[in-house]
Image 1 (cartoon, rainbow, N blue to C red):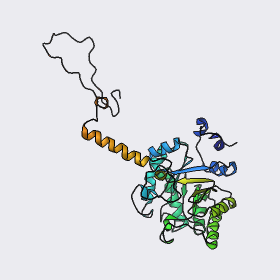
Image 2 (image 1 turned 45 degrees about the vertical axis):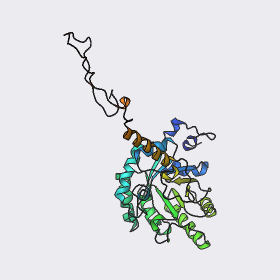
Image 3 (image 1 turned 180 degrees about the horizontal axis):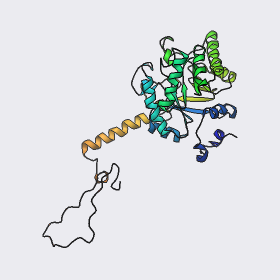
Image 4 (image 1 turned 60 degrees about the horizontal axis):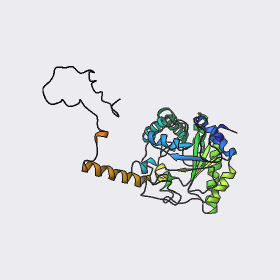
Length: 317
């Protein structure tokens, strides 16, 4: 049994912490295909979320260009820059110990040429602390993938619905419904595998097409809106936590309602601030005790008071 396969018990959710501390690498992810252990991929954009999602058992943390929509408030991913991805990558890498950290190559960071793609991918490892990169497109960008892989950089592919091609596709629409389109998506996946990709995201395609692709390639497939037959699944963290409530595609499931929890907690905070109920003495730093009234006796204290040392979190710090 591989290290990756031992990370979780087959029955129950208990995690072997000694094994869970082992860094998940591209070869280990490829090995998951043979072990039939599903990959759980989640997007992350900062160190705090990275720590929490990893503690929950996420295998891969993807710094997606989805940050343009869920973090920056944009309507598409197109305006996201390479510098944006690098910034968030560094933050996520600081919080991740076991999970693999993968970064999306944003729009126009790789499309121009294989050389341009390699240059951008190199920056992502050197300046963004990523361990792998992800790019959209299949046959047209196979040479780009091959150039990046030849430099020792793992590449996660992405076929089907391509958010960076939203205008060409006429919106965020399911791909591969017609026979010819299905063959095109399959050809894209096979081209990425041949170019050296270690995994492929299948987005917005019919379940049976996803099954066909998963059975046709020797590397793991990771689905989002592609049904249950893939080797793993990926969701945007704000979606699975119920935090991004403006849009809820059919394939999204809220595994928590943290968004409403944030609203409720903020309301409680605002109420206590306005009423004066917060902060109390328990949330305040102490000072020197008040001087007793009356005449001074001239007697010295048995123990000299220690001057308070103020810290950011507690009286003792």
